[in-house]
Image (cartoon, rainbow, N blue to C red; front, side):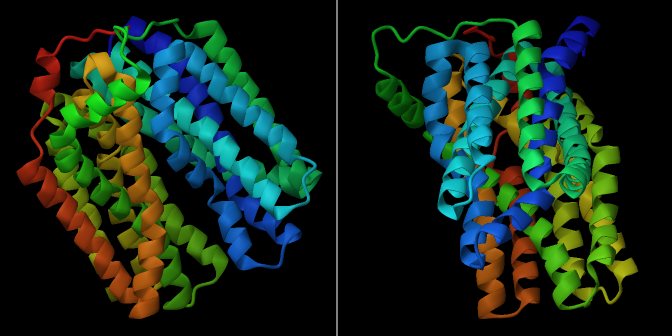
Length: 400
């Protein structure tokens, strides 16, 4: 990336991204304990933990309308404000249903923010550097996932669970401040007297082939990614009977490889093509998942987790980059909203599929199912989805 673009994105894009990623990752060790203090029902606790994902699904498509109406910068600030208000209201709550609704509201704010951010990087980063720019975002996200649980656990242990919500608000406020100070104000393409609904309908109709090919491939990809993150700890606990500390080390082996190698995906995408990152990445992930039932020790499972983490690193940012390449400049916001919704459907479905197959058969069967999704992802993109690097390079970047 050019030095000026890199410097601008550091302050306007990556810094707020790591702040928001860290804020949400802080919730990982805190929300289960918080929910246990509100109810004895594991079903309701599960609903609480799903609040963020539900918020995504609810708001992904409307976020495109909001983006068109207010522009990228104002939409990001609105998203930050929604999450801040929801978390502030959550601090004194002692009712599980109200807490869940507030987490859903905070999740809608995150959904709006994610789509506005995706639009911003798609406009600013030329196709020749888009893979690296978005791949680096994947690294920022991974850094937040590493820092967040540590910070959340320390704050909860020393100051109390609800203080973590206060820290969340502070981090989001800082993210909003960086957006105010550094992000460029942009405009969206004019509707030419068409309604938001008409634009949305046209976007879905005009891009139905993309959604039917690359969109379905993205569902497979998200099923694979989310599926193995559930499968490894479940297999470690249920089959190998490992304790929580050891499971943490096993998962950490995959996370370490993921964190170290994430930038390789951007290099592959920008130099050789998007499919050169996607296809090998999911073959490696699927092969690693396939090996899980054949491990008999923590060390062997950690080695397999490291292999899967390597594959996941190589796929870092691939779905976002594809979405940016395919997005038509005139209806980019609406397209990215639908694209994000499709991916979130896959990510949300994964734990349900893992649990259902494991319940009906055995846990190992669900692992083989995830491996099948991984190989299916690689095959689908190799045969049915066109290479977008050359197409994106020749397309004009307009609209903002």
